[in-house]
Length: 353
Image (cartoon, rainbow, N blue to C red):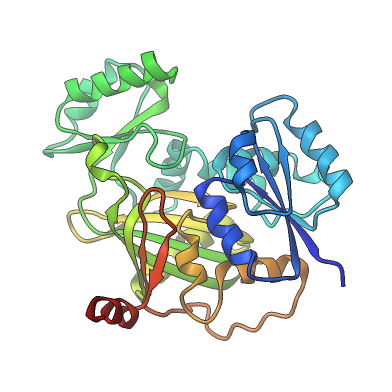
């Protein structure tokens, strides 16, 4: 029987590699890697490799369409927001499958300010947030808060891009000006919000035609290279642990139902932090793709997230009686090492040996 061809974008990068490592264990798939860097894609553990233009390039659609015509893959799995946005936009022009939410949901979630306004309109709890349209707005925004710390971040981007804690308006203005002058971002690309000091969660779920198929969550306990970051934080955990929390699951389901109008379809990755009142707040939704730490969700519980996703796309039989599939696991990561996933028992055994 011929193998099912699957394209993985960003091949050679951390997020893609965590997906590839799980799929590689299944012999029925042939993996095709895309990346903008010949060096990154060269190291990807895939069957064939292609260097493609950035998603923002006018040549992107033509190039990947040509490869798709040649390779005839069953689907594409994107691993970064720019490609999610572009692939969603051109989905009807591509001769392959994309297991995506509708494009209006994708566009909304990839703009944090637009999503913030949607959340307020739909009674979804988020941090109190204001848009910086010009640098003089920063003083006015700070005057609205009576807090020791605020959070300044970019409207678009992943991995806590352009995000840090600030204690006064001068720090915030300096931070925004720095990104404006050194990284070419606009002043209006930033927001300032209350800093959420509580627990930090990642909740990943897969839906099909309005039905929740699988949902898993983890708490981020520490962050990779946190000491070298201005905020001492990141969205990439060094240590994370799976959690089973019905309150958290109910909160995420409510958010996704409101976002999708009850017709959720594809992947929804929600970042959540708790505020000073221990209330859950959405910080962002990474829609249409997997978290970089998806290997934790692939290796916990009875059902792998990526296997579930692939079966839904290919029409393979899928039997999941409980969508809140759980087993306690720890994810331990650092630079230049393979991620390790251990149960508490495995952790104890290794420490005692």
